Image (tube, rainbow, N blue to C red; front, side, top):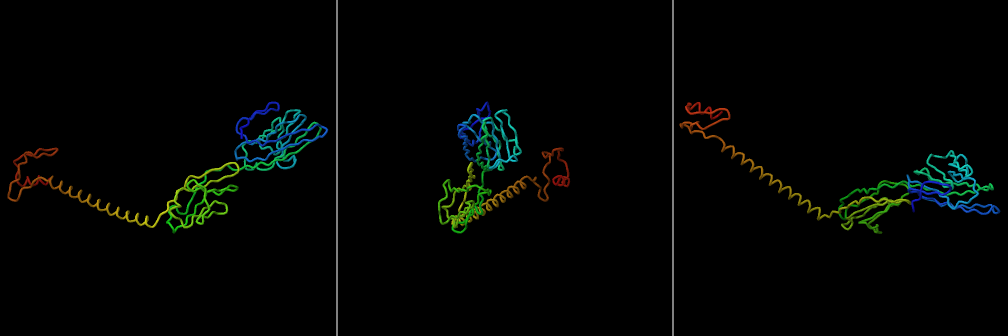
Length: 314
């Protein structure tokens, strides 16, 4: 649909921005027949968008328009009226502050809500005091957010575990669709869909069922699709082999850790032993201390054997 406009100037209307247009076709017959015919086409809209009830091919000789919420002319439910004589509009009790009427009778409804769903009636009066009514229905649908796929088991065992996939959230008046590896779900004895198509059950899964699963939700005005959910199907051989590999890996890691610890302990003992100063055997004199130094003192020879032993322990 093209994106009509936004300003009015003496019966000519140019619309700027995105508007959902509901067409209203006007015909006028000579006063002798005194007959006005209108056609209003029903429309669907997304919540938050603008809706335009458009009147075109406006006939001369019309004195005014009035819009009502509902299927009858009820002053308590009048939205707005317009007088061609004074070129003034008057808001009615049902005016919400979001409605604007234009000189040709078109009605703009801004930022529609779900509560705006329903019937709208246009009342037209000509200079011969002849009037006509036309009623149309507007349906407003919520903006669809991206759905998500949840599962009771993302790693089922082949030929043993069933898998239940669910499309979240639950929404009224939408259609649920499923895709497997980007392809529409085909009929299968191993697949079951709930009545509303929101739940997909895989019975007796096989490795052929592995892959990506997506759900899509639709209403008459919009659609949205989930991110892929990846299903991994395990077999008994794969599971047993994986367990054995895990056990072997743990054993190898344990052996390597033990070797590293033993080597570290051996190095520590070796370094500690080689760094100790030489001690004299019983009956031998203590070697000269002339070249032994500490960070704060210099020791010289001339000490007794007992004093030398004492220094060696300090």
